[in-house]
Every structure is written in C-alpha cells, then in structure tokens.
Amino acid sequence: MGEDNKTQVKERGGLLRRLFGRGDAHSTSGAKTTLELGDIQGFILRGYRMPMVRHFLLTVDVPAAARKLLGRLVSGEESDVPQITTAEGWHVGFEAGPGDNLADIPRHKPDYCLNIGITWPGMIALEVKDRAAAISFKSFAAFTAGAAERAKLVGDTGASAPENWIDAFGKGSDHVLVTLHAISPEAMATYSDRLSVLFAEENAFREIWQCDGMALMEMKDGKPIPTSKVHFGYTDGISMTTIVGGPERYPPDHQQPCEPWLFVLRDEAENYFVPEPRELGLNGSFAVFKKIETDVVGFENFLQSNKDKINPELLAAKICGRWRNGVPLALSPETDSPPGGIPPDQLNNYEYVNQDGSGDPKGLRCPVGAHMRRINPRGQPVTGQGEPGGSNNTHRVIRRGLPYGPAYDPTQPYDGIERGLLGYFINSSIENQYEFVLGHWVNDSEFAGSVRLHPKSKDPMIGTQDPAESIFVIPQANGAPPIKITGFSSFTTTKAAAYCFLPSITAIKFISNLG
Image (cartoon, rainbow, N blue to C red):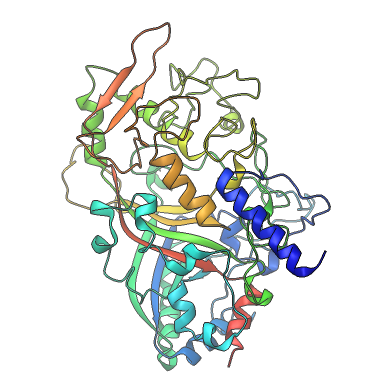
C-alpha cells in the first residue's frame, strides 16, 4: 500500500472513530509498549504527591533568549538551572512500580519537580512555527484554536466564559506555563527565586501571572498533615488511571488499563497523527490547565436546603458517587461505614454495569447522573463507547491538581475568600478526551444511552447549571417515586484556562536549537 493510501485509510478510520466512537483502547497487534520514560515529562505518567505547587504564566519577550533558556532546563546541569522532571525511574516515596527492582534502595524524594506547557500562541511567539518549516499539528485543531475559542464546547459560558477569566489568559499572551511542585515552603521559595531570575535573563520571558496551590491540612498528633481532600469535603485521588507499561503500580480493579497512546503521543495511536517534525511531537502530550473556583458555601447551603427530601450527607454522596470519606456508593449505598469496612485497595474495585447487563444499570445504588459516573462511566453503555461492554478508555483523562485557598471553615462560612482547584487535565487528544467528557458526559443528558435522564440533567457537581432548569434525579428502589432535586446553580466557575502542549525532552532541545 502506498504512503498516500495509508494516510487516507488512517484519516478515514480516525474520522469514523471520532464520529461513531469506534476503536476502543485495545493494544494494537505487535505495537511496542515500552515507554521512553526519560524523554517524557514526569507529571504525565506520575503523581508527584507533593503538598504544594506554584504555576507561573509567562509571555515571550525575546524569542531567541527564551528558546535558549528552555534548552538550559533540559541540559542536565542542575547546578546551572533547575531541571525539568521526567518520568524516569524515581521512587519519591511511592510504592514500587512495575519496572522497579524491589531489592533496590528507594531514592530520596526530590525537593522539587518542574514541568512546562506551551500554548499555540507560545509556539508562535517562540518562532517555532516560522523556523520549523515542517511543523504540523493536523490532528489537534483544538490545541491550535485554544481554550477561549473552544470554551462553549465544554460549558465555559456565563460566569465561566473567557471574557470573565483572569486577564492574563485567553488573549494570546499566555505563552508558557511553568509548574513547580515543592516538598516544603523552603524549597518552594528557593526554586521560585531561582526561576524568577532565570525568566528575566536577557529579557527572555515576562511573568504575567502566578498562583499557588496547596494540599488541605489536618491535625494529627498535634502536627499538620497534608490530606487528599478537596474543598467540597470529599477524599480525592482514589480512582487512578492505570497505563499499560506505565511506571506506577495501582491496586487492581475492574477497569481495563489504558493504552499509552492515550496520554503520550505515539505512532501506534488509533485516532491521531503524531505532530511533525517527529522530534517535536513524539513522546509529548497535551493538557488543559484550569483554575476552577468552587462555591463551597453554596454547596453546603444547597445540601441543607433539601434535608426535608433527603439526608444532606446522603445527598452529597449521591451527587458525587462516593461518600465524602471516599467509600463508593457502588459498594456501600446505605452508609459510609459499612460493617467490617472496605480495604483502601478495594475502594476503586467495582463496576456500574457488567457486560451481561447486571449491576446497577438504573442507578439505584449510584445515580446514573452522579458526577463520578459521568466522568468515568467504566463499562456502562454510554455515548462514545467503542463497543458494547467496552472500557470507555478512549475518553479518559488524567487530572493533576491541588486545591488553592484556605480550608473551608463551617463556623465562618462567609469569609469572602476564594477557594478552588488548580491543575491540568492531561490527554493525547483534547478533542476526544477532555472536550468529549465535558461536552457529552458532563453537560449532556443523553450520555447514558438506554437510560433516559431528564432532558435538562447535567453533572450536579461540575455541570453548567441554570437554576430555572437544573435537576438531579435520585432513583428509589421498590417502585418508589424518585427524589427530584431542582433549582440549584453551578457550584464551580472557570477562572482561567489554557490548552497546552507538553513537549518531550527531545522536543524542548529541538526548540532550543532552532537558532
């Protein structure tokens, strides 16, 4: 088969898959699964478990100086500048991964991790488009259009619309996002100071925005300990995305592991072409950076306002799909403390609907429209599922984020302080993963196939709601009428967004060598 014919077949197949959801994430026959961990930015494949983060948004002032500085960040010379963190073999306090030798002594946890994302305006400002004649992002129209242009597709309207975002975002000057995770306030201060000096050298970059995130703390034995909770009070980070050949090991569950090409740009991908030139595209990824404000006061008031219909904590569980302590409704629909408890390694080991149709197809245990069931339907038949009983993996995203703002104090609810979540939604295809989930599963009532939800139904936690139309229906057993919750507003508001390319180490060196 000639190269032109191969291209036509792949393009035609990719279009069919996008239109009809074909091509679930099963290994391509003979496809290599060895990931080049030393060439891939670390936070794509690893959760750092560091308690604090600082995001710097930069605009390019002197392109040549900016490209030169990017090269120094991957030079291997730590004594010169902080180095971008890769996914290469490092334990950083984790359990051993699949490729780790259990006899090895774990390495010390680094005191910082550093990563970068570049927007399409950033690629232009760095003169990559001008200097790399063969550059092509032909499969990634969302990236080149940008977050502001695509905002309506993901429900970022009204208060979340681009015109209401922080001024630094969505207007073409948001070029490079630098993300610094740190193990301590001292490390954060040290590396932040080093980076700020570097950005300004030779007028390479100008910092136009900065924001910090930090794990919410709780007291244990008289000492503050970082938690994995979010401001709404839920335990976060229980459902992890397992990647075939990935460096992290997670407890086994009912979910099929994801193919690497869903998060790392690889040749065997079923629905995209790796960006050209190959030095630029291979082993990269894409991510949507967002700052999301959470209306904790509104959420808590909403729970209490419906206590005549349903217990507030049960309502909180039905909305999310888990009790606030992390116990899933699928395993314990009546209580957050089931007799005998549930081992931590089993909290994610369940299915909503089995291949034979058994399980919880009508949502009596966990409502079909609950937040968790929308963003990760597992094997449930939904819009975009590759095949009946398939995994729905082709639409998965990896979220890397930390809260910002102080913990909510119920004794002082009206403190006027903004709080929310900062972070990245990582995927190889913004269109088929992030945008698909937000557009079809979160903000659409017909995502669940044969299960008919109310036509105005959206994700009750993160959906874009109109109080005049909003509705969340909680099915009841034994033919009892469902509980209908109405009249609520959106509990989250997008304050900033950027569509970023996460270049490989090779790609960053390629950019720096463009002259």
